[in-house]
Amino acid sequence: MRITLENYLAGRDSVYFHDFTPEIKANAEKTVLLTNALLAVLETEKIPLEAHPNTLSIVSSGWRPPQINSQVKGAAVRSKHMTGEAIDLYDPDGLIDEYLLTHPEPMIALGLYLEHPSATKGWAHVQIIPPKSGNRVFYP
Ligand SMILES: [Zn+2]
Image 1 (tube, helix red, strand yellow):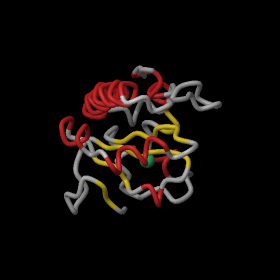
Image 2 (spheres, helix red, strand yellow):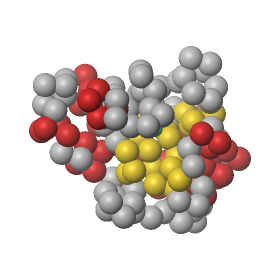
Image 3 (cartoon, helix red, strand yellow):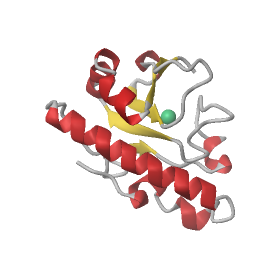
Image 4 (cartoon, helix red, strand yellow):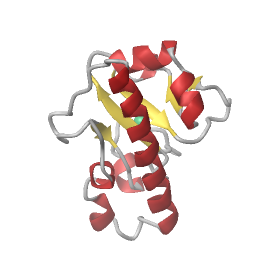
């Protein structure tokens, strides 16, 4: 399973075009590229991947312009979703979270960071920049 930039942006780049800066586009492209590399590893490791019933891709939440982010319950005010540097992968049974928590090697190799699964029931939050703590697996 692979994702496209369109899966990540979900049409928001058209609706919220005034928020969609070249910097965010570059970040989003990098997020998609690294996510696909991670998905390839998960497939090799036989982690079952499934599409979210609403988005029809494994992206459960991609780019969030400020107006969208402010409507997301529990979303951080300075969420990395707003800068195109974070993605939520649909993970209904927590199998992606569980694998990455116990096997951080692919994230280290790709430069990815995971929000601790205790805060992400039903999805896995992955981002392409380190959190303030610098920890590979972090609490928000
Ligand atoms: Zn997230």
